[in-house]
Amino acid sequence: MNQEEKILEFDKIKLRWQEYAVTERAREKISETKPVLSRRELDVLLRETEQSRQLLEKCGTPPLAALSGMEENLGIASKGDCLSAFQLEQVKDALVAVRRMSDYLERGKAYSISLAYYAENLDVLEALREEIEQAVCGGEIVDRASARLLDIRREAMRCGEKMREKAEQTMRSQKEYMSDHFSTFREGHICVPVKKEFKYKVSGRVIGQSSTGSTLFMEPAACASYYEEHQQLQIEEEDEIRRILYTLTALTDSYAEQLLLNIRTMEKLDFAFSKGKLSLAQGAVAPVILSEREIHLRDARHPLLDSASCVPLQFDLAGGVRGIVITGPNTGGKTVALKTVALCCMMAQCGLHVPCKEARLCMNSSYLCDIGDGQNLSENLSTFSAHIKNVLDILRRVSAESLVILDELGSGTDPQEGMGLAIAVLEELKKSGCLFLATTHYPEIKAYAGREAGILNARMAFDAENLKPLYQMVLGEAGESCALYIAKRLGMPERMLRRAKEAAYGAGQSDGKEAEDGRETAFSKLPCAHLEKEKAVKKKKEIPFARGDSVMVYPDKKIGIVCGKANDRGALQVQLPGKKIWISHKRVKLIVAASELYPEDYDFSIVFDTAANRKLRHDMERKYVEGAVIQEEE
Image (tube, rainbow, N blue to C red; front, side, top):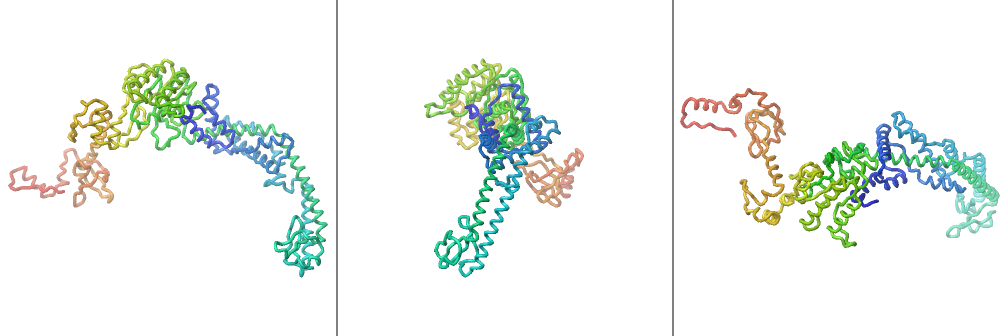
C-alpha cells in the first residue's frame, strides 16, 4: 500500500470492498488493486463492473463459493498421495458450486450480458462429481462405494451379531455368576460381567476388570472365533476403503487442469461481482473517462460517509483551469471535499463505480497528497518540516498527468513566510501543468488565485446556525475562515472577542461599544458577520397569514378566521365560534386564503366586531358621541 492510499483513506474503502468478496484470492487482488494507467485496461475493468452490477440487478446474488482447500487437494493428488474422504467431499462441494454458478450465468445470457459467458470456462465435471457423490457422504466412505465394501461390511455386521448372540447365551445360562445383566465391549472384545469369585466357573479369558476389582470382564470362549473373523474383515474393509480413495484421487488428478480453470474462473467472477456489489451498496454510477484533463462530479459523496447525512458535492475543474484554491471555515468540510474528489478519481481509475449521480473524469498518472499534520517525532520533524518535506517530494515527482492534493498549504510557520511559500508552490504546480486542489486560510493566496489565470477560488458553504459543514463547494468565490464568528457562536465572551479582533485587525477596529440597537459591537465588523445578519433576516421572515384567512386550529381541529397579522412572538389572533384566541402560528393551518373568500374592499368588521361596536362606529362617523368607547375583544 502506498502512502497516498493511506492518506486518502482508500485503504478503508478496500476493506469495505473486501467484505463483498468470497474467495481469498479475490480479497488479495482487491488489496493489491492500484489505479491503472492503460485506457484499454480501464475500459475492460469498468465494463466488468457495469456488467456484474447488471447481473446482480437482474438475476440476484450469484452462488459464489470460497472453494477453500481446493488447490491444496490438487497438489496432494498430483504428488500421488491419497486424498481423505473429507478432502474428496471438498472437491465434490466445489463442483456443486461450479454447477450452480454455471446455471446462474446461463440465466444471465438471456440478457445478453457478456460477463455471463464466463459460463463457457466452467466445466461442471458431472462424471467426477457423481463418482465422489456415490462413494462419499459426511466425510466417510459409504457402503455403496463398491460391491466388495458392501459385502465386507455386511459380513462384519453378521460377525458382530453372532458375538452378541453368544454373549447373551452365556449370560442367560450362567446368570448366577454375573454381576450385571448386559454385555459390554472392552478393547474391541465383547465381554460379560463376571463376579470375581466365579472367575473359573465361566469359560473364556479376562479382558479387564471394574475399578473396585469385584467384577471381571470376560470374553466368552464361544465369541473368540467370531472376534478373529471380525478383525480380519476390518482389515479387508480398510484395504478396500484405501483402494477406493486412491481410485477417486487418481480420477480427481486426471481432471486437475479443468478443476484449476474452474477455480480461477470462480475467483475472477468473485472479483468482478465484488465490484458490482460495492456499486449497489454505495448507489454509485459508472464514470465517463475523458481524454481531456477535466473533472466533473455531480452530487458526489465521500465513500466512507453515511449517504443519508452527507450533503452531495458539486465539482467542476475544466475550461483551462488547472488548480482550485478552497477556502472557508475550519469546520467547513474543505478536507472532506479534497478527499471526495481524489477518491472518486482513484476509484474510477481502479475500475470501480463512483458514489455520485454523474462522473466525468480524466485518468491521472499519479496521486500526490499532503494532508494532515504529518508530524514525525522519530524523525524529529515538526508539522511545518513534515509539510515542506512532503511538498518538495511532490514537486520532484509531479508531472502534467498528476493530480495533486494539498491541505492547509503554507501552515505551521510564520503566516507571512508561509503565505509566500504557498504562492511559490502553487506557481510551480501551475508550471508543471498538473491538476491540483489546495486549501488555505491566507487572504493573500485567495487574492493570488483570484487574479492568476488557470487557478480558481472556491469556498465551502457553512451552516452558521448549527455550526455544521454543508460539504457544498461554491466555485469562483473565496471563503472566510470565520474563526472569531465560530468562537462567538460557541460561547466565547465579548471581551475576549474584542481583544482577539484588536490583535488580528488592529486596535482601531473595535471601540469597545456594546449595543443591541444596531450600533457596532466587537463582533459587528468581523469576517463572517454577514452570517449573523442573514440569520437575523431569516428570523424576521413574515409569517404567511392574512386577515380573513380561513384556518384550522390544532390540536382541537377547530375552524376559525384570522383576525390580523401575527405579532412579534409569532402568535395569531383567531376568531372561533363565540370567542377570539391567541395561538402560535405553528399550530394553525391555512384552509382557504381570504383573497379567495372575500372581495378586495370587504368590511371585516362585520365578521370580527360586535353589533354594538358596529353601531357605535356608524354613529361616530356621522357625529360626535360624548363618552363613546369602542370595546376591543382580546
